[in-house]
Length: 231
Image (cartoon, one colour):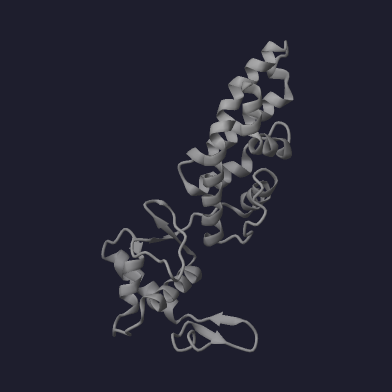
């Protein structure tokens, strides 16, 4: 209350703190002016400058960062750096971070993606809120997990097919082979999707021929199974 009220961030009632509209209105107008003047992106540096207009307030950098983060939350924006998701905080809010309006997947795809993140990748603590911050965080986690799992998932497919043929089995009919192929496709999808929103949408809609649990097990144990088959 001692910080937020003087900054006009909002009002602390007896119940939860309520964000006010002062900074959102002020910064929305500044963004609109910048866009009309031909700006094609909005950075944290821009917002810091606008906070100090029309009269300098003399705010410290951390206090400015608090205002920027509150504005991003209120205006449905997330942060990116060099086209990828950024993880801002009051202590670390780089001037080069770009504020972007997230192209969120629809709620059905989002809900499925949250469920699959837990059942397939073991990401059980993902924030289920359908908002830009949770979306960027999920995209970051999916990319991180896909990058870690892809090498083993990719190498497992041809080796498993070879071992099945050596045993006289038909790889095309083997459920284990179908699962390994699905796991490989999923890992590639997480790493190679061109747009953040597409990562979540494709993750939610990709066909799982066996079961989510089986694909999850194939991904998590891929390195161990690969090592065993190579012996």
